[in-house]
Image (cartoon, rainbow, N blue to C red; front, side, top):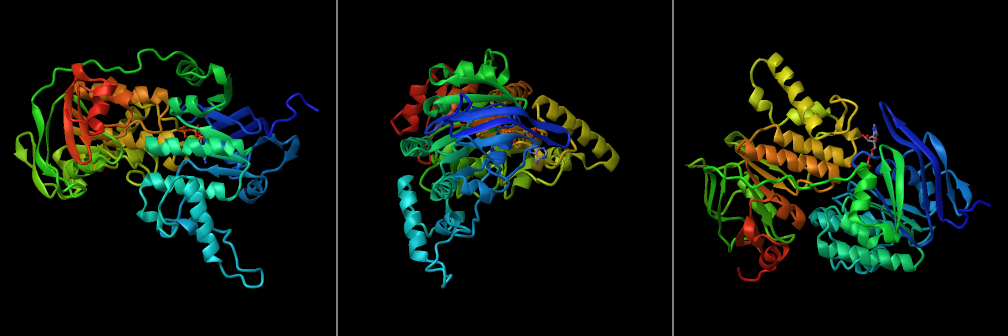
Length: 503
Ligand SMILES: Nc1ncnc2c1ncn2[C@@H]1O[C@H](COP(=O)(O)OP(=O)(O)OP(=O)(O)O)[C@@H](O)[C@H]1O
Ligand SMILES: [Mg+2]
């Protein structure tokens, strides 16, 4: 018997190649009983690929998987489920025209009896309800998934995994669209599962969360093992060093700017989501303005109205002094606005198209000259942004669907950055990005601001707001609760306004 005898799961020498990419190179992983193992690494390091292999979605080119010492062949998702392995994918995997219960039990619906293969709906909904309560959700199991906010859809994914009674629960960035409260709820569930003997593999770019929940950390870099940390060694700097291979000094590159002339004036704007409140503010060229607030404060709604996705109920918007009335994002783009939306999966990529085409998609109108010039321009643009954002891809001709989750996000950012807009609205610009990529984005924002772009940055990460903003607008329940200049910025002053205390 080997010395690691007693481990629940042992992975040895896993290799996986895709055309042009070595995703995993001789990777080892050990998971003990009732432990939370965090797997960290930069975008494209191979985390999701390794998890897909464990869950029978992908097949390794080489290597061995053992469960409680016995070699197993995880050649299908069904086999993985039998072995007690469940994977919650990085991208949501739900049928949004079905209700919660139907999604949770899809393909495994309880039957009245083996003779009467009719679905036992009362049992299905009752069991779904039990799991939802366990997750702290108080919506009905009959709610259609499409009517749920993204955060709750994520919880349905988790419910699905819990319903198969997995012993090894793999979560690939489960909190990327959860609020702080929902994240706490999830951690509660994870700790609960641990006491029941379940082991969890937890993938996240949010190092604060990793520190809070992980018993051990395993880092991957360029498809290889990059080191491990025991519980008492887990801290931000250690993790960054393992992931990036060096210390990252001076994380936020921001130096305060002298803002230029007013470019955007928003006057008594009323959004459909919060009809009782008027919002007024201005943006000036070359400044980065943070838009802070708790989830649901109305920041995304405001961005959507400014970008012409929704019509305002009242109020005025002026761009360079001229009033604008936008009735579509297309018109917004033509006027000189750009929005990097929060929900990037749905609003931004054509997965079957190349990186190059996706990047130039929104900018095409700009190159409505001879098609030859356009192709040339398109190619140069895509090359430049792929390099600047360090998008990890064998070439700009690679289809976007084959990129890692974080790298797909970078493509969406590149697409909007290529527009060189007057006003750039970024909604959670670094969600799901690794620390290195975050820094690239900050650098790029800084560059754009220097060139005179006015940037409005919505973010739920206080550190990012503090680190990058020239001033900060804080929203609370649909209204602008206050504005803070740079010299009055602190976590306390922002939270004070965000939670509804008077300015
Ligand atoms: N089906 C595929 N075809 C081609 N290349 C792929 C495929 N799946 C993944 N890759 C490549 O393998 C590498 C590892 O990707 P993976 O999705 O495992 O990264 P990750 O660590 O999960 O990154 P992220 O933090 O961005 O989610 C990347 O370079 C990716 O582009
Ligand atoms: Mg991934």
